[in-house]
Length: 526
Image 1 (cartoon, rainbow, N blue to C red):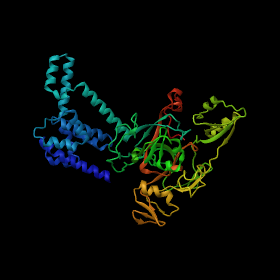
Image 2 (cartoon, rainbow, N blue to C red):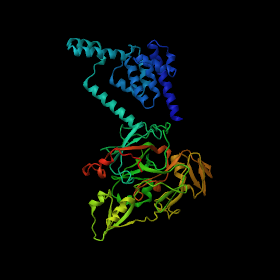
Image 3 (spheres, rainbow, N blue to C red):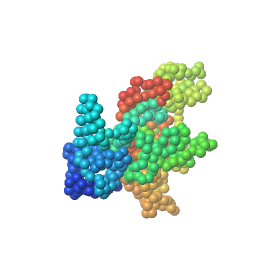
Image 4 (tube, helix red, strand yellow):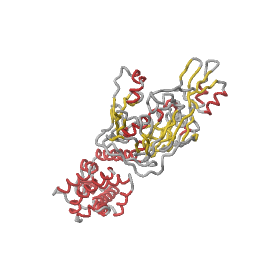
């Protein structure tokens, strides 16, 4: 609703600023305030056909149409300067207002008609090798002659503008940086991700460096300003987020993070787990806060949606009491033992085993394997045993060491995944599961006083969720930081649906070679 209000105010200001321009062109000013009529008259003023206004109805495309028309509008009043065009694109109401109040600015006719005539005559003069005619033509139409520097600048700006909008609204390229989704998606896989499938999420961060997500290369500084910002809004989706689909989303816990050279640590991890603190004891790591759309991107598989109950028993996920469908190449950590104390690493690599993250203990090595790899390695005469993971109190969701202390990444739950409109009882026992939803994701004031829970200063025994939530886990079940560690993924954090792998390097390194057999493979293959 806030985004809609913002657009309505912008449209009103645009209409008001165009009234004087319409009048200067001999068009009744009131037409600038009538939706549809204003667009048609605007097109005719700059030399477009009336039906060109229909492009305003197409999402994303209409941004480019708008940018072109505002530039052509000020050019039709003799404003041909580079920065005058920039101002028109950045905030047209101001540009139109300045032109309207300038008594010297007169309507010179449809600029595009003049430009088309200029290019026609220019082409004819070149074909005839009429040097004198070219000079006369350029003297007659000086506004259409641009320096090479300006032509290059405009071309680069347009390319960046187009790429930024496509990346922001339609499709973005991502690379898999870690092994959390192996063996379905490998380190070094480059994906195209559709932002339209689950509904285009309009930008919340207004001021940002184009084509950068959250960190400026080399400078290692944040690439945006947190304020001003717009509220969350999502256009209608082509499909819903389904169970067992890989999904790209913003890391929910990534709003307050310490930035290390090799990874980010959210504030909860940092305070609960002294591993990070001891590892970087002698370094002063930068601490940053990030808005939703600037949190790090993660890709995991959605195992449960809002309204589901989930439980993990001995590594098998159960949703609503039924065993979930497992990815074909789901991995766990295994211990391999060789009687000869040697391993044929070449054969292991040929089986697709990632040895970069292997660890060795005497005659054993630990590696992540899927069941197909397990059977083939056993056939090689090696002893293969799946590793057991013990309890990790405080580090597993709901991150409360006093409760659920016996939960492990292989034996977890049962747990409820919140659904929009659903109401749950609030008690001191249930609050650890929902406090972050109430306070952070849904922006409420939350306090516990004398054993009682207060939401927005009102004592609360129940809470009704404002959006849907999802449970995301990596296919590499023993080497993935996912919902088992930081909980639910809110709907407003969903970014898009992976489409296909457009390029893939072995182990994320070009020097190791290219995975030719993975190029153009579906990213949703189980």
